Length: 184
Image (cartoon, rainbow, N blue to C red; front, side, top):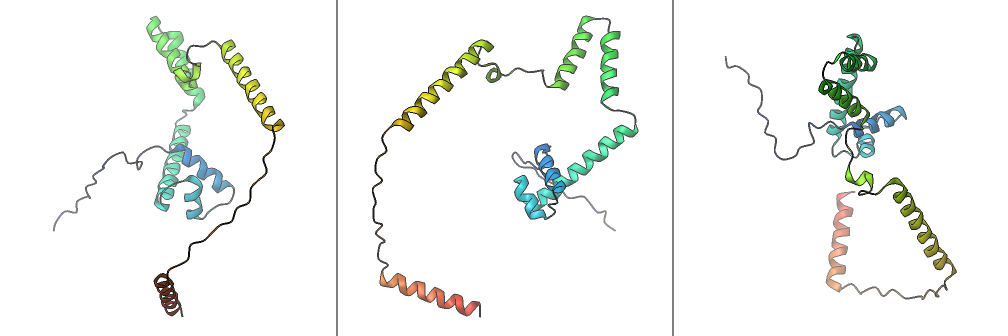
């Protein structure tokens, strides 16, 4: 008897099949909590391509939930992790270990990177605020000019539809007749 082999899967390109789609997961949770249970509606809400993607995302949610409950059963929660990092920081002998513990804290808070776009391209916070105020004043001045300006009279126009050629009319009638015969 031959041994049953598992199928071989070839992944081509950038397939979102394996990615962690937490945004879609959160949208599905919100929709499900509001009483939406139709898979097609869930697909539209989460902007997924197929209904199979909805089920795949729900499976990822179930795995995520099970993972969190497994961590809780093992006694690992956020307090445990923070206490562990605190111990590493206080017990660390070298300043390099302390720095790495502090970097881990910053990463957990999302403060590990400062993008160039976030800082305003080297401007101080005072300059950013003054630029925003100037832009707002310019916008108000522009709106004021628009409101106070003269309104032009709307010109009416007539739409001229092109005439359908007799061959096209005949073809359309034949299609209508054929459609009526199909749905009798």
